[in-house]
Amino acid sequence: MDLLRYQTLLSQDSIPKQQLDTQVALVSQYEGALKADQALIDTAKLQLAYCRITAPISGRVGLRLVDAGNIVHASDANGLLVITQVQPITVLFAIPEDDLPPVLKKLRAKEHLSVEAYDRSGQTKVATGYLLTTDNQIDQSTGTSRLKAIFQNQDNALFPNQFVNARLLLKVERQRILVPAASIQRGPQGTFLYVVRADKTVAVRPVAVGTTEDDNASIETGLSAGELVVVDGADKLQAGTRVRLLQQGRGPSIGRPTA
Image 1 (cartoon, helix red, strand yellow):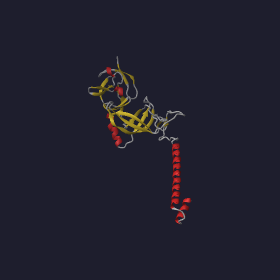
Image 2: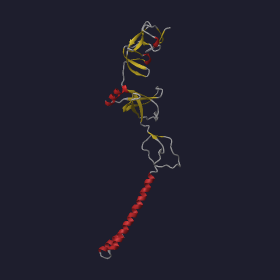
Image 3: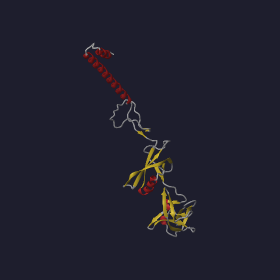
Image 4: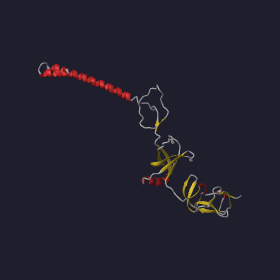
């Protein structure tokens, strides 16, 4: 207000210009002090904001790495705690490099490949997800390629760093003949089975083996549904050997050579 009065008086030639300039400098000094005080207030607000740490992701919090009363610094290597994302969660697993081409073909076609996670025993299914992507190289030491599957994990069944057995569903084959994998024999001429004939003797039957999973193998050609194959004791057999059936039921049966 004094500055306005001095400006009016100067326009009336009632005061010297030096008196107005002094008043202008005084106003600028007060404005500078006001801005400096506002900067101090903003700095205090910024420091206060740092007192509340907001997690960048949602997840499961591990055991705290510092206790109440400890002094922490921005340069501390370990931080306060570790947050692990569990929803969704990914599973890494490997497949033989020979099985990779059909998987890549399905991914390029934008097909949705289902992946099931089983426990360590491979008997209990833990969760179901889908294949996300594959690695960009093959591990030369193992001859395998890594794949990544994603699971929504809404029930928190999967835990970070948990060991699971992953099963990738590539396709469904119907009306296939299955035999125990232990019944398949290998020789110079390829794969074969010992088939039990009606007179309880065995015959050597060349077969073409398809997909093998767990303890079962599919037979492409060489075997008909309902035929009996030898599972145990095949190393003691030859064509024409008589066997005694120890177990007979639906599907492949177990046979042992007679004494």
